[in-house]
Each structure stands twice: as structure tokens, then as C-alpha cells.
Length: 341
Image (cartoon, rainbow, N blue to C red; front, side, top):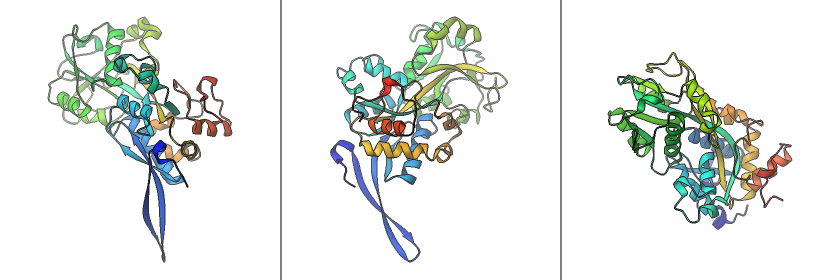
């Protein structure tokens, strides 16, 4: 197998596998990949994609976890990494040189190098308040310290937007917005240094449940009236109104209530410079071994033939497109890559 290592950032590594009476050398091409922190929707999707690729292709992801995905997308655009989840909202920001990319002169150029493999609903925004504060809804965060997410990340931008569109609050005016890395933000909430902690995560995630082990928390959401008044404006690209069902978490003071919030979509992204055969093989391995893919986390069962192209803003990678075309998927015209054969 011959690959252009400069363009694909694939390094060859050999590992020995022992069988009865013989030693067989098995070579895997390592593919540079990044993802978010363990327990996140981005993390489980990346691990699942790697699982099927490692088991059924000549490739294995070399995953660098706990990364800020908006920065990983820059790496995809520059061709420094080959695979990374992309928040749909962030793809739109890069394509239009706005939000965290507003001062990046080559944002649109980098966005042109982003490619898609499959879409998935990555989770829902959880707004946790200390259970002792007596807060009930997002309207109660006025005057409070609110952890929004990492600096320059899609999560902090979305948390800010939910509070602005949903309840009309501005950071720095109606509440004190705090931006820190994920570990620091979680610790600040545990230590009582912030009153409210915003965390995008799959429903039922251990990331959220951990806060109910030694203290109580209240999930703050939008009211039905706020959702109805906001209409379609509350959900930006890659988002939709969803519910965190009652009984999902222990230690939750309002655990007997359904909580309205925003669900968000990611796309498993690839660099346009990623080897076409590699992406083809990985995509094929996933769809031909979906039970193995699903086994990593229940949330992944939302990845189906009906949802695979949902919310995509960047065109498919040429390798992924070739598989979908051969397999008879109905590919939207705007997702067909310009370099498709």
C-alpha cells in the first residue's frame, strides 16, 4: 500500500500479533485525529469510528482527545490532522468568518478544505445550578456567575446565544459569563466559584451525573412559553429544541420534570487532503458494521441512513461520497464534492 504521507499525515506502524505456532506482523496506517473530552458526544463518535476502522480496515486513528473542536477544525483546514468532529454551528461560523473566526483572515479559505463523513446528534445543552440556590429556570440566572464553556469554543458561543435569544440576557450585563477550559469549569462549579455550569453532553452523560454524587443540582431550561415565543430563531444551524426527560439523573432537584433545551449536531469531519481510499474504506467499514459502531454508546443509534446527512454544511469527502453513491444513498446535491469522480 502506498500513501502520500505528506498530504495524508498517515504514519506507518507495525505491531506483532502472536498466533499458535507462528508470529504474524500486522501493519496499520495511523491517522492523525482529534476529538473532545471523554464522555462527550464528539468523543464517543470518534472512538466508535476508530473501532470499526481498526477492526475492518488497514487504518487506525491516532486520537488526541480533550481538544477544543473549533481549533481542531483549523487543523483540518490546514491539513495537519485528518479526522475530527465538527460542530455544525462552528462550520457556519468558519465559512462566514464570524464569531470565534471573525479575526482569522483565512477562515473562509480553511473552511473550503473542510469535508464531511456523517452527521450525528451529539447531545443537548445542560445548564446546571447549585441545588441550594433555589433557581428554577434559565430566567433565574440574572446576576449570577455562569460558566459558558472554553474561550473561543463553539459551546461558549452557543451558551451565550441560548441565554440571549431564550431569555433576553446579555453576558456582562445581566449575568457574569465565565470562560474556562472544561476541567477548570467543572472544578469551579464543584467548588462553588460559579453558580451555573453550562455543559453540552449526551442525555444521561456521566459528565453531568458526576455532579449529583456529592451535591444536588437543578437543571435549568427554557419554558414552553419561551420556546414558543422564540420560535425558529432560538435554534441556529445544527441545533433543535429538545427535552432532557424526567428521571434522567440522580441528585437532580427537579428530576421529576422534563427540561427544554437545545440539542446540537456534529459532523464527523475530514480534511480535504485526506486520502480518498482511506475515507472510503472507513466509511464503508462503519456502515457495514453498525452494531459494532453502536456498541460504544447508546446515543450513536441516532446515526441512521435517514439522518446521515442532517444539518451538514460542508460537502462530503470524495471518499465518503464514493461509498454513499455506490451503496445507493440519496446524497443531496449541495453535498456532492467538487472533486468527486
